[in-house]
Structure formats: C-alpha cells, structure tokens
Length: 440
Image (cartoon, rainbow, N blue to C red; front, side, top):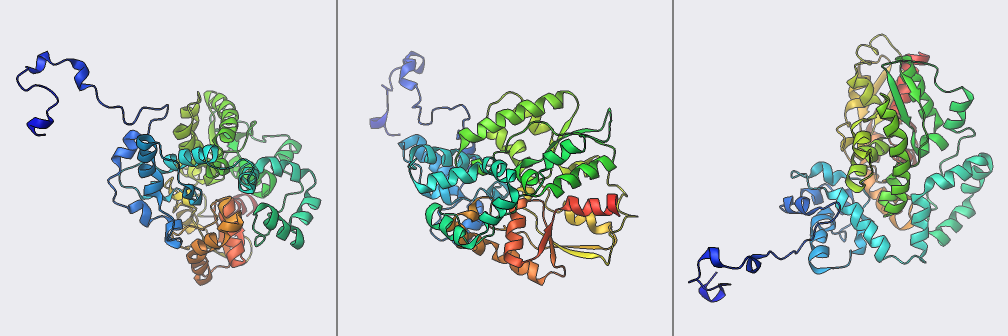
C-alpha cells in the first residue's frame, strides 16, 4: 500500500488510532450453517469437475466447482441469483469423494438447489409440480400400494406413459417399478414383528420407501439375515430419508421427514440400538446430509449410529468364516456388481465383491467405478433421460462384457437403471446373503 493509500496519518502512533477505523468489512455474514470455511478450502484444482458424470456428457454444465464454492461466493458477495444449471446436478455426490480438500460440495449444491427452487422456480410451472411429486415418492407409493394391481396396470400402460411425458415431463421410456401386493411393513405386522430377542445385539431397521412399497423381498432378506446372526430387530415409525427431496431442492419437505426419523431412531439409540439401512442412499442421508443440512436435536447421535447392512455385519465380524461352508443352491451364479455412487462416498464400494469371494457357487465381477446415471429421480425426468443413459453407457458396456447375466447393487434406482440398460435381473447383496446362509 502506498503512502497515498494509507488509511491514517503515519505520524500517529498505532495505539492512538481509533478502533473503529479497523473494523473489517463483513463480506460473508455468518449463517446458521456457515459454509465460508469450506468455500475458502477450495483451491480450484477442478478435480471435482473431472469426476462429475454430468459434466462428462454435457459440455454446457458448469460443473460442481461453479455450483459449489464459486456460486456460494457470488451469492454472498454480490447477491447474485442462483444459476438455473444447479438443477442439472444429479446429486450423485462423487465430487465430495473426489475433492482433496474436503470442500462440502454436495452441501453447497443442496442449499443452492433449495434456494433456486424457493426463489427462482415458478410454483405454477409443470417442472415444479413434477419435481415435487418425484421428491415425495413415498406419498404416491402409499396410495399406489393400496391398489397395487390396478396401479401397476395403469402406470405401465403405453398411451398413459406417453401422456405422462407430455403433460408432466415424466419420461415414457422407462417402465414404472411395480408395487408389491404386500408391503414390507404389512408383512412385518403379519409375522408378529421380531422373532429374536437379545440384550446386546439390537438394531433398528430404516427400510426406506422403495424396500417397503416395491421390493419388500430386500427388506425381508435383511430381517432374516440379521435374525440368523441373533439380532433383535425393531421397525419404528419412519418417513422418507429425504434423498429425493434433497435432489429436487425440497428441503422443507426433507426436514419434516428428518424430524420424524431423528425422533424415532434417537430414542432407540438411547436404548442401545444401532440404525441399519439396506439402501446406501438412505444411509448416506442419515449419516452425512442430515448433519450438514439440519440442526435438529439428536441428529449427531443418529448419524454416528447409522450403518449400511453389510457394513454392520462386517464390522461386528458376524460374517467372519460364515460363507466358507455356505453355498448357493443350483448351478451357481455369476454376478455383475455395480457400486452405487453413494456407497463409494461412504467407503463401501468394494465390500460386496470382497464379501462373496469366499462363497462357493457365486462369482462377482465389479463392472467399474462409473455412475449408473439414473441418480434417483434424475433419470425419470424427460429432459434428463438421454443424459442419464449417456452417463450409464460405460456401466452398460461393462455389464455386457462381464461373465454374469445377473446384476447386483445396493441401490434401488441403480438397479432400475441396470435392468433398463441391460435387460438383466438385478439382485441386492442381502438377497444373495440370505440365499447362502438362511435358505442354503
């Protein structure tokens, strides 16, 4: 700084200069969940951009670095509007895993998306209401499950699917997932709840929406497998994990379900239970997104006590040696395994491959580290369908080259995409584990 720029008379001693002359400009005022430290940690290496599956197939998408720290600075410093391209982010969260500086990119994206939906998206637009319906899948699934056969027939009627695309922007290219004739919770009540009692092996099951309404066989496999190892299971009141709401900028909706979930599960944690999820996106929400986005009492306890199902069995060494003498009935099976992005973000991407290595009659081949492309509700939007399929192309090719013609993954929407792009039957690792240990 030159003498001409000096803010005070150089002849005046420092200890006589009024304090108010040195008050810093509050460029970035603190908020309830302040992200300044995270934004400052970004040194613009662009590793997040090179790992973004959307940026890889869409040259116009500015990437996670812009959507995160750069847009955060613009908003706080210049009060700039959130760029509409935030809605092109799929919330795969691969940028979190890639960042060498641990910048909270997905948290920034979630908050920016919510701000854009609140301030920049017309509440009368078809896009807003389409996204709201997708984000609140649980409500529609509850209604659809009351009349599953009728719902399944209507949802997959060709002309009605085309009408849905024209009127609501839901792609007609995908078959709607079938609703089960009996939900998991109905089955749970019918069997009389837990069949095993234990003082020290107790888990509370967060089954999520899809395993309840669409694939109860996955939830049943979780129950039977954990009971096989002597765990007492409870299935408390619960809402959606919030994953589809985060992805569509509906944070107020997500908060309501989060309050229900945290209340239910934190009470059980106090009684000695751990929280188990069979869906990696659900465990990701409870572990990472709740603490990042909400300041609800009990959030930290729930996050600290939440586990993915296979992870929990491995941590507690229930599976040590368990598969050595087990086998799958029949002629064996080769499985093409895809690790969901949200599993990778929790460090769980290799566990299924390693787990089944010792199981006779089962061969597991990892089909690479690419994103499946569907990213929950993302690939169900008509304007995102082609993009989601382009992202998934690498996975489809790897599946085609794999020995097996059955797929395996922990994520229900990844399973949809795998089946849609390959035509293969898709299984959950818990179903394979149940077949080996309980049925075998």
